[in-house]
Structures are given as structure tokens and as C-alpha cells.
Image (cartoon, rainbow, N blue to C red):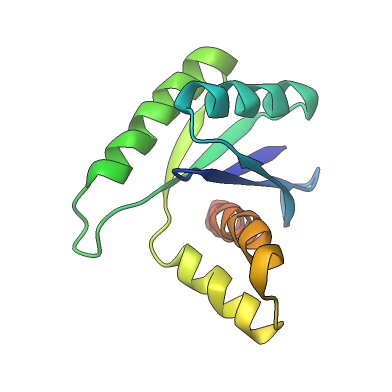
Length: 135
């Protein structure tokens, strides 16, 4: 199975593939700002869910350059590989949060529920994009 991760400054969204690695499903949002706690929580999910591969959203600037968030994601990828021993794939996440917000608009999700849902949905978009590309 594959874990999709939308790593954020204060919330990290998670999505998981089905056993055939065809479909992404939202999993949870972890509310935490501490880098190491996010890494440890992610490693726990990997162990509990028997994850084979981690797909970590890789925020690039629209011109393809890597900014501070991208560098932080690269650091997280390295940390997760060290903690889990699993392959970590950095996956271009440009516009996934925009897509998640568009879906929230279409389904009329508002307020706190929207904040809690958008990161999971972004993780699912990241993961589904990877799964589709892999086929």
C-alpha cells in the first residue's frame, strides 16, 4: 500500500491507497507544527498500515524552482526514509490544494470542517496523481 502525505506548517493530511494501489482514500489530518513529531507520527502510520511507499507532496513554485517549503519537504523525505526504511517519492503538488478547495466549494464544505478536510483531500489528490501516473 502507498501513503500520500500533504505536509504543512501546522496540519499534515494523509491518504492511503487501496490494496491494489488503484484508488486513494482520505485517512486523517494531524494537527502539529513540530517537524519531528510529524515525522514520528508519519512513521507510526507507515508501520501500522504496512505501507510500502510514501508519496510526499513536493511544493514547487509555479516556475518549477524550489522554495523554502520545497526544501522543508526534501528534509522531511530524508527523515522519513531514515525512520521507516521505505522509499519516499517527492511528488509535484502544485495546484493540489487549489483542487481540494475547489472540491470543497462544489460540495459546500465550510468552516472548521473545511480546514480539517482540505489537507486530507489534498493528500488524496497527490496520491491519486501518483497512482494514475504509475499505471
